[in-house]
Length: 369
Image (tube, rainbow, N blue to C red):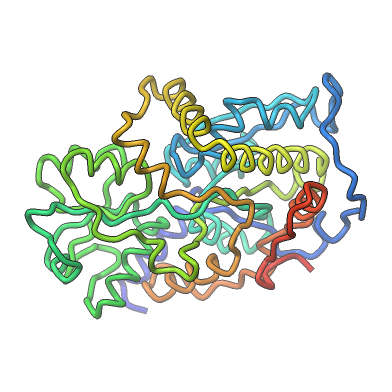
């Protein structure tokens, strides 16, 4: 194996221990033991479930709006009854994975690359993906004075949030599809891939140190507010314009010990997504209010309005697209060929969906047996 690839994979493995959601591979987990009781109801007010508290992690990011809105509106807490929801926010997948592995959180909203890498790193022994949350919300935005067509990206400096993260993998795959060459580890080649934290990207763009970025919302719209233009919406590259951007994951131990609590959180998530889709303007305002509480500053209308329109909130984890994203990471040299069998346990989600009169969702043959 070339030295560069070895080093890269070591760095990705290190990131995986944090950013990526390791999910259990064993067939003896809760999913195969779920009772066929389709009657579900929120815990009575004050009635405690099997745990006193449930610790949930998510990002201060619009692609995590299910968590933002569900927390802000109390929709998840309502389903938990007397069990207390304690939320913690993160800026990156590695720190959230670290927290979940350490037991500092029980359930997390997180992207697909951390899910894949974490699962692979743990050999399927500590986490599972239990639901979906959002699709889309990722764009290639560029300086229109320097880049007018997709072909003009060649030779330019384009930011992604982090080496091996979901957007980095997607951009590297797009570069390869164009027939261009880039060393994944260094980011050097026909395009300069500049790993830049989302919060730093707007200043990097203003200073001219990057010519564009392949980033999630609201960073993409923040850049547009600084004069950048949307050159490509990643959703156009996927069948039906859908691809997973946010999963819901859980510690396998917590799933086994407290399935009623996990079910309540999923029920709250499903009801939150239904409320978001039925009340988009109210939901957008709610997410922005939560962001203001968390960060001290709300998003301006010129940022949140276009960002919100590009995200689809869905309970379906879009499992087939997770496998495709894993294939892209392998192709880029960021991941050894992974065995993702058992990464999903959608038993409780499908129970909740059935009770809500919604169609069940599939695990693309990657579920627990």
